[in-house]
Image 1 (cartoon, rainbow, N blue to C red):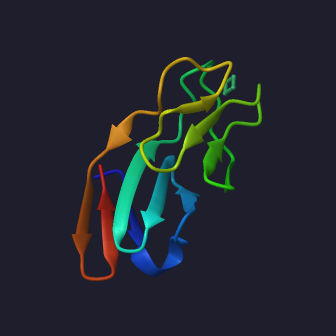
Image 2 (cartoon, protein in one colour):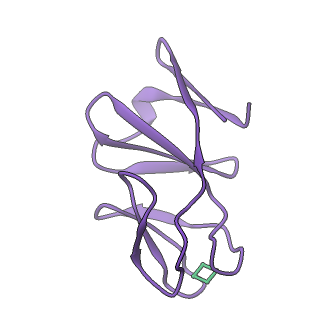
Length: 93
Ligand code: FES
């Protein structure tokens, strides 16, 4: 397991970045998780805002829904991780 995150800490429509993972909640009660390593050149993505997960190194953006590329230069999506819901705790990876 890569990380544990409180479900209540993940905003609906957004997400959080914790311990090298990104956890998002695209719609209430539905969670997704991704490795926080940007597939462009390996920086750690730094923010989740306005529906995308953003890398500040060169400006790539990835959709909170599935980690797909919303804006380059990255050409590959974020690597998806498993999410297990255990009460109010999300176990990632
Ligand atoms: S390393 Fe993330 S955009 Fe280049």
